[in-house]
Image 1 (tube, rainbow, N blue to C red):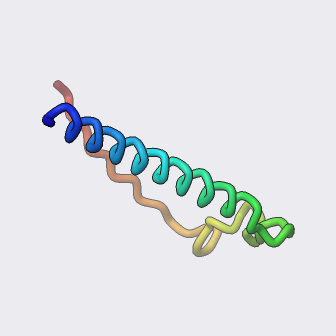
Image 2: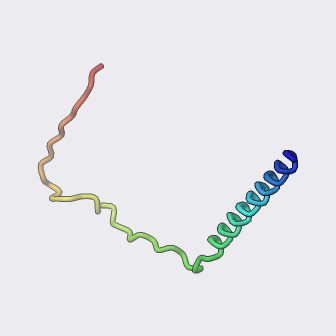
Image 3: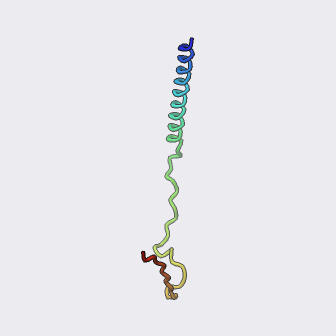
Length: 69
């Protein structure tokens, strides 16, 4: 009797595992084919000097912190 219960439990676990695998495959397949066909939007390009803020001839102060160990 115990072997029969174990067989049903193993059979049920196998069915659940197969159902989960099929669900994962279906979800992945739907995500791959659900695209609109157009390319994603590209970020706006900035000129090479876009990261510069302030006047070109402004004074600059450099402070260095060092650990001489």
